[in-house]
Image 1 (spheres, one colour):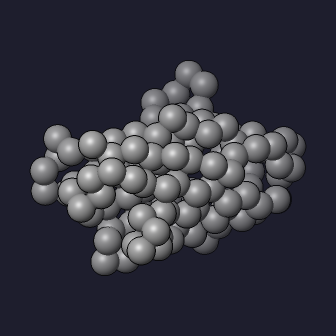
Image 2: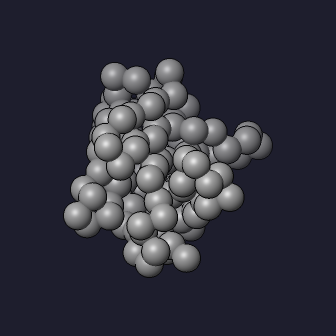
Amino acid sequence: QVQLVESGGGLVQAGGSLTLSCAASGSTGTINVMGWYRQAPGKQRELVATITRGGTTNYKDSVKGRFTISRDNAKNTVYLQMNSLKPEDTAVYYCNAANRIVTAITYWGQGTQVTVSS
């Protein structure tokens, strides 16, 4: 089992910045990709960004150039630096840890609210 603890959400004005953190503990050796997803009210959960253990990143098109995902493998922690935030970025952000080969291995954090006011 892997436990994920998220932090860093909050309320920010449009154009502002926030940084989310997600610390993984437990059987982290089974994980080779971590990422962030978000879910706005009435919408499906969607991928925001992912990063592999080797550092390969993937981003949702609408956040490219504004968000940066990074990870500290020694601390089993992934970060999401969010700049130039827009009201449409408002959502609950969820940390995910998974195994790209064994797709049944996937874990979710409890979610952290990000609210961007206009």
